[in-house]
Amino acid sequence: MTGRTTRPDRGGDPPPRPGATGPVVPPVPAQPTGPDPATPGVAAAAADPDLDPAVAGTDGPTQPDAEVGPDPTAAKPARDRAQYAVGAFLALVGALVILDATRIGHAISTADPIGPKPVPILLGVLLLIVAAVYTVDVARGGTGEPEAGEDVDLSSPIDWRTVLLLIGAFLVNAVLIDRLGWVISGTLLFWGSAFALGNRHYVRNLLIAVALSLITFYTFAIGLGVNLPAGVLQGIL
Image 1 (cartoon, rainbow, N blue to C red):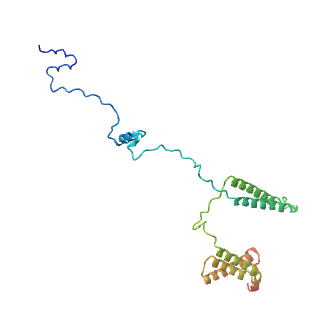
Image 2: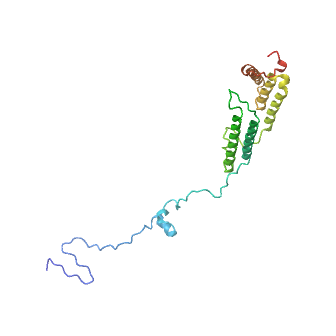
Image 3: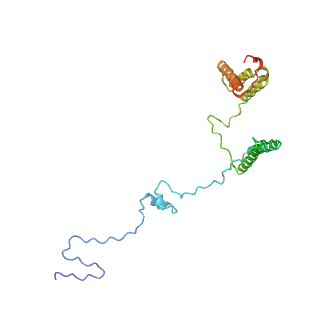
């Protein structure tokens, strides 16, 4: 009989319909879904069960970013004990200013009704306040800004030769200023200071020292009305 299909056998597939072309392709069984074992991440995850396959294919296992906090092992900056001496010095100066101001008499006039006492007392009180604030800041760990000068090595030793030469130049000036006068002693002071600091242009430094001594001598005499010792040049200057 044509145009009809036969009943399928039990346990078998129905016969193809008449007129169908091509072979019948059997259905492909469904494959379980999952990561491709050929990828590097899956291979690494298979070797290490604790490794996340999502990050195993990268250059290396990534760790979660840890919170950055203060290092408990970091040493705290050492407190500079010498700063307490600065606070004590300011307090001492303030106390001395106030004490000296209390000894001033009551010289009150119509031109100055307040008198000379209030200003030094105010300065002394301000010095005491600054000393107290400074000491509290040091106690809380406050430190000054490190020296940031050019070509300064704070770890280098003190150049005692230069220091002693400068001290010697000032001492020579203090001893000779009354005997020889400021122009000569000042010339030795300026020339000796330049020599101590490493300048070796002796003639040029001598001319500059003489010029500075004369300028300062006449500046004090004419501009300020203060006569510096003339010494052996009395009557010439």
